[in-house]
Length: 276
Figure 1 (cartoon, helix red, strand yellow):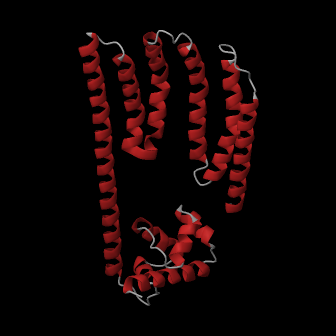
Figure 2 (cartoon, rainbow, N blue to C red):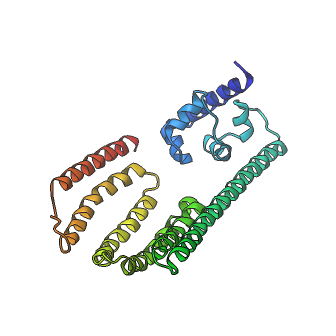
Figure 3 (cartoon, rainbow, N blue to C red):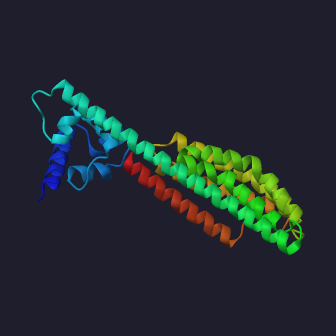
């Protein structure tokens, strides 16, 4: 057994010992750190290390110093200067990792934007060269622009970009459908149906986003509620479609979908109940 594996086991045993001293279960410790109890189990079995960004919080929860956590044993006296040095190193490493992650996100977002802009230019040039004017490229260009405004916040900011993407979709979806309506000769029902679907889907998307924000620590429960909400959503969509096309409000396929949504909700609710 090499030194790294042995140190990992020492840390895991120490975490387990201090957790039990605090009369905490693995689930209690996981909830205090905002992680899964499986991660805690892996630490204590020596299968993995805690992420460097968690060390300070983990030490605080267990009532030990970071030095003791890294050494895997209690120390009679820990020089204050040494402990401060360890904290500073951890903070620097954490800031460095965050800066690198932000830089990668910026690069990906720039590449994403550049590719979409190149797609617009390519479609426009090809359409102009073949048709002598902008015809079909208006459809592709508007679609790409819609994807750019809706997707950029997600690529650039990750989860923090979700509300910005939802806002972009909320504002741009109907104008986008209007452009498609003007450019597609046979799309007479596209705009009216699209508007009704937008009025249904956009509030639903915002509601689900808010639900997962409120239940950020109980994602399985949020998923169960989402599955249940899919049932009235589907019925409402079918009801609106029935005014424009011969679509029944409820058919065999809908019954199957409702059954699947109900089963999914029940399973997710059960998983949440076990984890709570």
